[in-house]
Image (tube, rainbow over all chains, first blue to last red; front, side, top):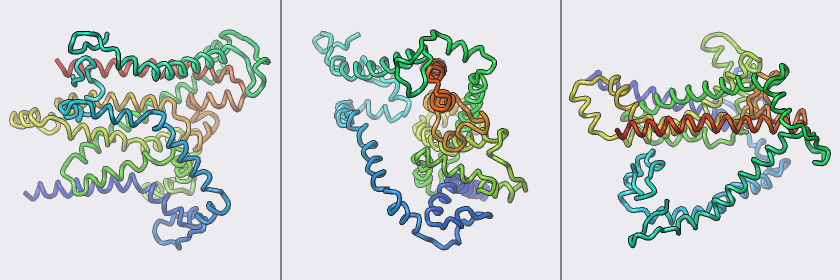
Length: 121
Length: 299
């Protein structure tokens, strides 16, 4: 019983550690947005205890015309789904039999649908 | 070829509906490839009028393949190391972590959602932040110095490719974790229960049951990532620009260098065509393996 509990704790700690390791660079990137230049390039790096500032955001809105880039990005991102006709795809999916939908929950099954009978092989 | 309707007649409607989209996609792909091929047969300075292009036949290909100063083979070697190294590491780490997250873990669904974050960040942004982390007084060296007491010059010829691989592994391992986790959660329960009743160990279940069942999924993931890795440009370009020297000059970077830096569009196009052939060949091999594994699974 103690062994199983210990195993559970180890697995949980390990999983948490791995997720933190994966997300740490992202955390550092996000916090850097609120750091002064001095704190961003400091060595040893400053992780938590820094004086937060919004100067970086002020700079991008005032000097860099960020709204223009955001508009462009949205325009570029919005176009492909319209061209692909995503609405048509959704409607097509509704026509598939419920049994086929259940079978396609197997991820690989999606790629192996037999076109003759529309069934997963 | 055509599906039969209930009355036994051939139903051509789906194919007719697909035809316009197929024609558009095929025409664009074919024209682009033809234009690329045409450019690979000329000596043309990028930006100069097309009339100034001089026909040289297959000279660009021959120069790239047999000339002693050709950067192609070095670049191919770097591409293969980068692709295989990153892919194998991502597969191994991704599968191991998927197995771990498949256990009953507190907050497993939150972890899964959080792991998507590296994938959705813009590649140019990924390149920029890791360029900062890999600087001599950056985050990576700080941890290395704290743990093992050394600092590495990641922007040297010796370490640059490894740094690029680490970034790709960080960015794309969650992709494998997510698809493997989905696969592991949809595995049938019965064979595993039978194996446990028969006294199989966890290791034996993994090797003789989980891995064979998961092989098609592993191959599908590998095909997708393999194609991506062979044509990756943005992260390497932002981090190293193909340098120092040619230490991170993968084939897509070589295309850019030949076309934009050397302004030799012919050679750049020739490298592009070789890259396309490489991607198609390897993808076909992987796809054949995928089909074979599915066939074996059915038998």
